[in-house]
Length: 289
Image (cartoon, rainbow, N blue to C red; front, side, top):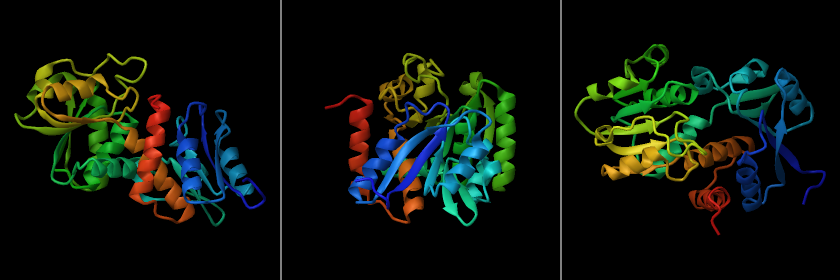
């Protein structure tokens, strides 16, 4: 029941109308018996600082940030977590003295999702598809978790080169190797973990795939697509058809939300409870009964 003691958390972005975050956080609040409600806030371009200051003035407990404000919001914070600073993107604001502290829970969320599926990053050799914001963050995650080598394949080799130089420099190790997408045949003849970090194949363009050539997929022992809708992307199907394991990104969505909830409420969400939330997400997104 909402009363005078109810704490508010929310999401700022544009658009926010199709977000799954309220389902994650309001389900967690119910399971943990927390007097908390989570709502989306549509924030117009140019109003981000006002939104952050307003949230603090209104005693909002915590805020998530989605596109297109994950970098822009950093100017309005009083403090920043080291990982968020390196990545250059914030998706979670935690209330502190005088304002909010910024975190990035997307990448720890991906890491927890990978662990949950039994996928290790340490000492792996990885193919990373893409060089946009998501791929850049994944590259940082790989560097932090001591991946041996990351072959970053992108349509624009120059963009991949810029991202690789930045990640290698900030992480203090040479582990990201940029390549033009069409040069995938030059990859070493071995098996890789492949992370698909582009929007290719995202609903409704579910037949699209970044590389068509089936010989490419024979190099993949495990494929992880950051996309979660559709449940089976063309990338995932091709990985499976070539004998590999394949996973979608719904658990990343789940865990980035859980980590934000844990930061706001100073709690630890047990795995059994996380899976209850996951089942609700599946039912909602994939229209399961």
